[in-house]
Length: 235
Image 1 (cartoon, rainbow, N blue to C red):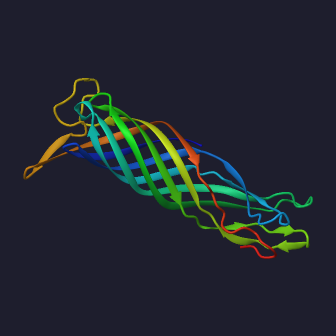
Image 2: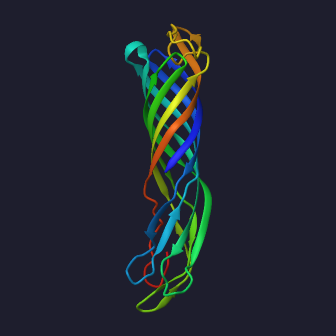
Image 3: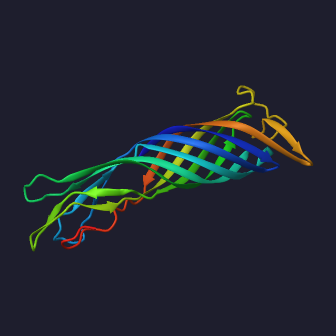
């Protein structure tokens, strides 16, 4: 699976701690196939093909800036995710008869957790690497009728459930608004600060950040298709 996209966010920094919110959207090129719905060798199995093509996330993140001048940020993130997934459930060989199949195309909400490291290059530019885990429950998906033998019997069409999970690695290039992109020198304010607001003795800094995805690779997780066919009943 290959993804490309971008995200926009806002960070606040208090001392070494950084707090932020982010919105992310990615297009995906993917296609996965796995044998499914075959409880035994007597039942004609199916190929379940799935191809998510859009991902979007809304997350909060918290991190700590460390290293020389506090220019390296390690962070955790978590929030909600959305995917659009489409594919087919296609029966395997059925004795020369046309292969029965059903199609699905749906959007689904799920969750995301992740962690990463961001390194400042200048006061305006930084790069980051990140790992995300996304999980989605699934809707009810129609399964095509099939046959078993022996004894010969027609197993009628039915409904099963679909869920999916993904392990995603990201590399990003980030621009921080409020800083001169061509000046290499570091400002006195923290990396993620654009302006400061004082509340009593506390000083909180914020900065708007736009990230552009350089490359993203995803390792799809399991895509269980609910209970499998068994006997004369389909789940």
